[in-house]
View 1: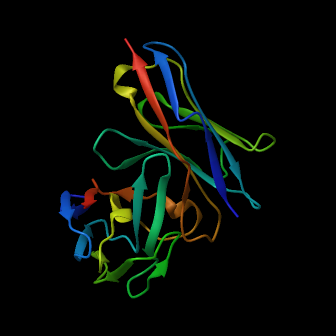
View 2: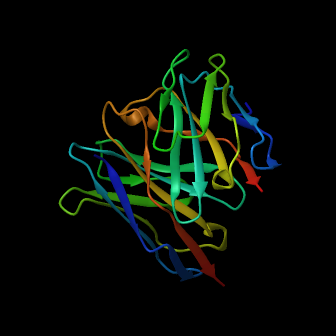
Length: 115
Length: 113
């Protein structure tokens, strides 16, 4: 079991470039999440997918789009990168949303720098 | 709305000393509470969770936390710190029926030899 995997591990973009962060889980989880982590701000939810075929905005969705490709994969796209999107991005999954089932499993993260 | 406040962005303890990391929550309904640990350059790993069963919850690596409704707290403790405990710790809250977790801003634990 690989758990939650993310690619790439590191990325440098120029302002205005686009890219897609990939995430996959092999735990047969229904729910998946994208967070960004910035110093002193903890983790902030960008988007989540409660189940295959659904996606919803989180706390900081502006400048991002997501696709739940299938039950395993959940991608995050930056259409036109900005320096404010420099961050570490984490993907997570859980059995489903709601209460005790919110035990989330995290990937190793993608460190993104936008110059 | 749910939220958590972690008091102290940095905590230093000597090896072998008590570890106490503070978390206070705000929730209009009985919450579910979690502690996660993040080692350098890694993702978050669940330490323990409170899901309305026993108020004293034991987790991995000798950590435990006590849910105190009267104090709206869920502090994380470990009797004796080990060098390998140096990491960042996050408290998080959810509530029944909610679709996401709300994380605190984290506490970085340093263990002094």
